[in-house]
Image (cartoon, rainbow, N blue to C red; front, side):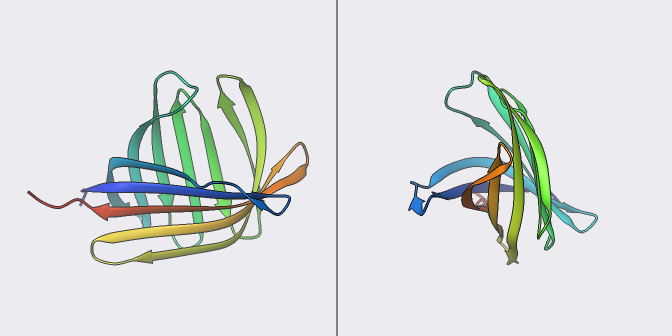
Amino acid sequence: MTRNVIITVTGTHETDGIKQEPVVTTANGRHFVQNGKHYLLYDEMTDGADGVVKNVVKFNEQMLEVTKKGALESKMTFEKGKMNITHYKTPAGILELGMTAKQIVMTQSRARVEIRVDYELHAGGRKVQDSTVIISAVQQPIV
């Protein structure tokens, strides 16, 4: 069953011990479960890139995969203790980034599902920051 949901993505980052302001994106989207994995589908407009970015978020208790297509493109995979590399395509060029998940926690109830990933972000062959992403989907009220 597909549900209409409100999706919130919150990213927090810490570089050299200095916490940066959280980045929060909220969008209407769809949620469904297939083959034991949750899927979230939503579109977003992004600063600095013309056009829409289509997002597909796939996750379970062991992994998170975020695929972006459109004005920005990437496929970021997070698995606990494993370094995954992505090529993040932006209007300014392509960035090679590595992500190593330190912790993955998924919670769910009848009207909400959430995944939290604490991870290290690597660029240029070195760790550049500690980050956390929290993605939640809350069922939209039926009117």
